[in-house]
Length: 478
Image 1 (cartoon, rainbow, N blue to C red):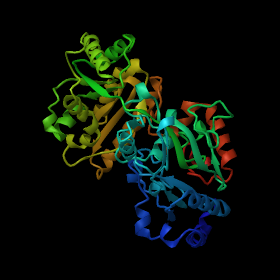
Image 2: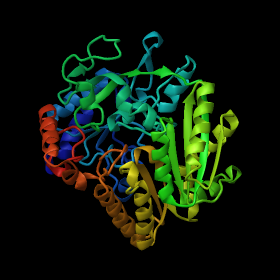
Image 3: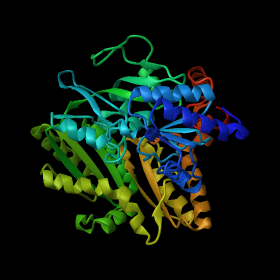
Image 4: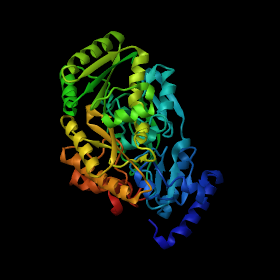
């Protein structure tokens, strides 16, 4: 990459060339416009925004390829960006350079319903894709909480999971092939050229290499995704618990009973309070924790599974109810869907920040993790709302602070570090679905050991100049 003294002159030349090769309207350099690209949803970007030098608005794969080729010639950083809903600083331009705003590449290229697949551009919003697929009786199953905002390209870049990962797996499980612009500007297709097969054992798994790579190895410009028929019905079980320890036991018992729910979500007492403040009409009952079990499939099977779950969970819970009636199911599920937005309501004049927000621990240790999160919050004198995907051990502590108070900012940073280290101590990971980005670099050596060096070798092989999303995962040295 270029040195600091050369940056201004080089970026002026790069911007001028991009305007010639693309169009003037696709290249932004106005400081006010660049400021909008200095943030994502992370607390890190709130504290330390990173402004790019140029923003490019590609309208086609060729625009991305030209931009990356120009960047490679001038050794200028390139950071791909979708909807900026990321919570780990993954789309922040740490070293300035070019931000590729992929949000305009938002089309369904082709639906191949007979072969259960769809080809899309990376900027399509998850909920919009599923609204399109629903008209054909199909669904793209991964279900992140930010469905109405996040892009599918961002989901693939972070290998998102979400609420239904227990039954349906990760985003990467539905990626059949990708079109990717490499660091040289070359365009390749993974998953076999022209293939419409749902599986393949041909060659190295390059598709999986790019899934979850956070823009470090290439820029995804098109995706071939597997889709499935929409389950015809859903049921819901709500269980109240007086003791956190019983939540984990009930989940284990449910799975041992041979039942595979589509989702099992947990709300602790703080999350229950947040939901009731945000949506009083939901009227969640008080408890130390609530579990929401969702089942889907054919009506007879979901009624059987919901009733059986209620029987099993009833041995551990203080109260259980279940329903297959669509309005009641929707009402119960709304409590989980709003908790992220509701978190900030528990403390007037404060805001929810994303710090230490994505740990994942073994299922058996979820209750211990929940109690330790509460204790850590009290010790740091913080308000923290906790919820998450208990069946996969993915927990989302949500600190609520006065962001203008330096002392609270310092305390929440200490809290986040303790929570990340808690995850490792319990045999888990510092990120279950949001990615490493900037906020979890410090834990990568401990978590991966020598495997981190292999990742670095792959990065240097595919991006020898280090221009693709530099400063992430490996820190300043790659």
